[in-house]
Length: 396
Image (cartoon, rainbow, N blue to C red; front, side, top):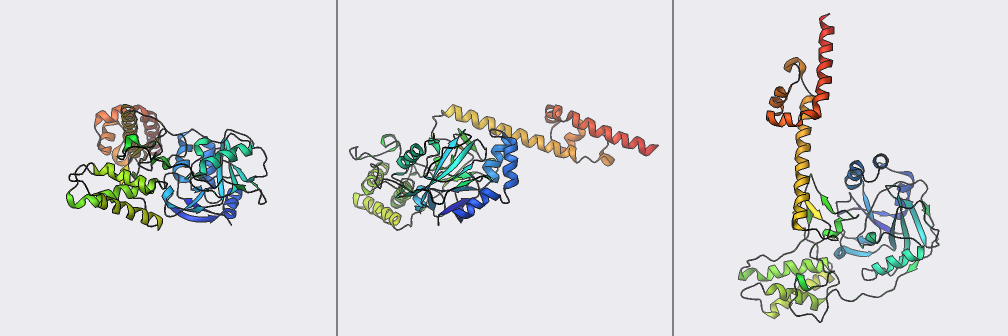
C-alpha cells in the first residue's frame, strides 16, 4: 500500500496527515468537502485572482515522491513512497503507457497529474529518474515540477485513470557527485560553492513559476542560517553548530569533509578562531545527529515576501514589487473600511450619506474619503434614493 503526506495548503510545508493512495483516488473521483472550492476555482479560471487565492490558501496539497517527518524538506525524508509524480501542462489528453499507474486532470483542467510506480528512488537519482520516466511516457513533462518536495493541489476528476497492474520503473541505484568540488580551497563560502548548495529553504515554497509569493495575513517562517557579526568567545561553538547543522539539514548530501570546509570558512570570522579539534568535534556531532534522525530544520526567520531563487531579480526590482504590493494592501484596507461604514449606515440616526458623515464614522480624513469617493458614489446614491423613497411612502 502506498502512503502519501497531506498538507494544509500550498504555503504550509508542515505534514498534517498521512493517507493511503486508494483513499486519495476516491477523493479525486468522488470529491470531498473541498469540491465547492475546486469548482469555484475553475469558474474563476487559471490566472485570475480568485483562482490563485483558492489554490494557494483554501485547498490541501499532497506530496507523492517521498514521505516526510514533520515538514517537507530534504532533511526530513523518511522513505520513498514507491511512487513518482509527473506534471504535464496545457494538454487535453496523455499518451497511454503501461507504466502509468494513475492520471487525473489538474485543478485548472489545463493539464494532468501522473503517478508511476518506482523502485530505488532516492534524492541522488531523483532528477534523472523524473526525466527518464517523462521520456518513457512520451510526454513533455513540466521540468520545474521535477522536485523532490514537489506538491500538487487537490483536484477533482470523475474520469480519473487508474491501473493497479501498471509496470514498475526501476531507477538507477547510484549517487550523483558531491555538491561541493573537493579540489576547491579549504575556505568555503557562499561565492565559491556549487550553485546547488542551499543556504535557505525558500525554493520549497514555489510550486509554480511565480516570481514571488506574498503572505498578506501572516508572515511565513523560513530557514536561513547565519553567523552573527560579533560572537563572544564562549559562544563560538554554539554559533558554528547552529549554522553547520542547518546547512547539513538543507543539503543532506554534504559529507563530513565538506561540512568541515564550510565550518572553516565561518571560523575565519572569529577572533580568536576555534581550534581545529573543536571545530571538527562540532561537525562530527552534527553528522551523528543527522544520521540518527535527530537534526531538524530551524525556521528562524519570518518573511512577508519570498522571491523565487530561480530568477535573478535585482534589489531595486524587489523593492518596487514590495512597495506596490504593500501600497495595494493599504488601499484595499481603506476601501473595505469605507464600504463597511456605508453598507451598515444607520439612516434613522445619521440621515442621508455624504462625504463628511462618512469621514466622521470611518474616522478617516475628508481628503481620504474624497480620494476614494468615486468608487462608492453610485452605491451611496442608490442607498440614499431608497431611503428617501421609503420616507415619502411613510409620509403618505
